[in-house]
Image (cartoon, rainbow, N blue to C red):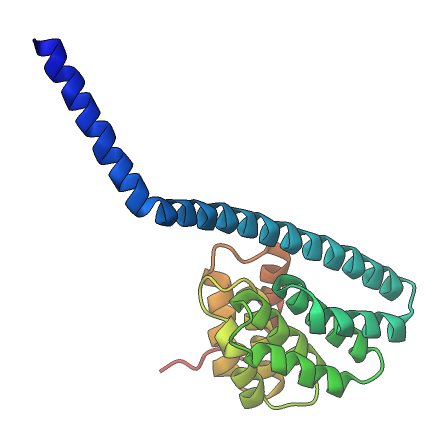
Length: 217
């Protein structure tokens, strides 16, 4: 008797499943198609992005070779093309390298390009700081200490990738401006930072020796 009821239950379950399938099969099939299409689309997107990155990498290497061959005009054009159309990572690198090529013919134009990168919030902090450093290198001999401070202070914070160089440049600018107090402030930061490179620390100590002694109260 129990076997009979088992068979009846099984028939009932099959009938219920059939009704559910008849009612919802179109939705189930549509969902399955969407899942397959989504996975396929994502795989296709990944493939295209990888292909774009590989092409951009090869183009970047060719542009670097042109620069190393002193074909600066051609290198500048190649980096400009990458800056306009390459994936985001290569776009930033290409902008930095394009500015470096421009500097070979027009340093002030290069400064403007570096300033644009430094002000671009879509660019990573390290790349922004590098642009600040490069621009400051071109104006160090011709601008005031307050201008250098405005340019470089964001790059001097603890944890910033290029803080050591930024601090050294500000110390040198302050020393040239006869601002011993400001120069000493940056040199102290250099001395107290355990990650300061030895060569930079040695230069900072040499500059410290050129400062007038602190007045005794």
